[in-house]
Image 1 (cartoon, rainbow, N blue to C red):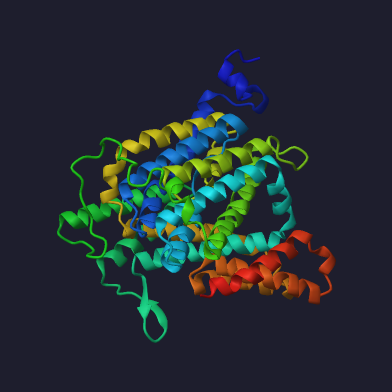
Image 2 (image 1 turned 60 degrees about the vertical axis):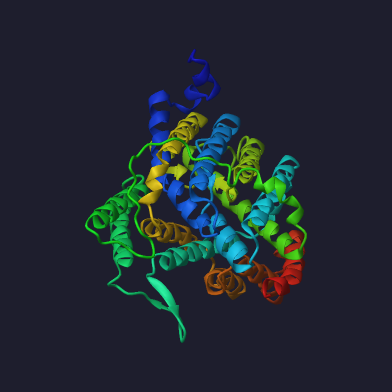
Length: 446
């Protein structure tokens, strides 16, 4: 029996692991998801939030959330502000609905508090189990397409057209060429099976952008700012810290209720699906059930509350944690290592100047590809499922709204299933959601 108290706490002997293996796994997970340090400030920065403060909030919320997951649930799972959730926050809520970011972040706080309560009373598991797998997959795939569309727009690969709405951008643009270069490099890394390929692709693209800037060639829309140093003091959180609390009184309309519900909905399936997938990969599942599920969901929901107070969009469990598990991670100690690396990353904020939208766009596109992989598991041969699934997926990028896609999918699914004679397969919770979205659809259409 291992006498080391840390090894005993994390059950190294039971899982056949050791400090070296868990440390390597923690580093691998960090490298696989380090792109979020730069992508999240870029996405949320479109709301006019302070990007330097967002860098700190991203790193700190990831460190705290991952530490909670590692110590409380003892899972080799990392937490950070979620892709998809940050896009919904920026492009649907703030830009699309015209809601100030201060009010939106207050909505995140309320959603987080509700998450904590429903996690404690195990309501979360009931709702998760009530929603059909096909709609969960459609939601994930739709968000993937939406994220990829945002990446294509940010890099100007896709631009506006008064006649056709969108068209391909100029291939003579420095920004477009840099993004295409970064996309090709990232694809090569991933296809070769290199762990952390998305992060390394960003590094190579950023270096290429700096070289072009030194040559006097830069993208006017997303100029590169070459820093005087790589390491600096940690940027202040003051511009965004605590804003969620001071603006709680702003949550006073049906529009904002929809926002809170959508944060809840997307977060529901994101974390649950990720936890199940990684737990299965790590051999943690027992009788197809998640041990310490309550602790894991509490760690996840608590991190949303903490993240909102720090000033960032909802956090979630990261599927990139699977890279660490593939490297041998089996316990929460690997998550602790990942958390420590996020804390150290806070000293590298000067790099924000070289990680422009052209550099982060390939990461958004690739994340979209990975999320769209859920398409393969949808039952397309059954129209009663294919139609609501398609509407969920297509309407997210077509209406530039994750909420609208979810709403249309959840309204049509009970109808098609009932007409097909499969009404008995619908959980009562689905009818509750059906009524809620019927009421909220006119609000979304405004």
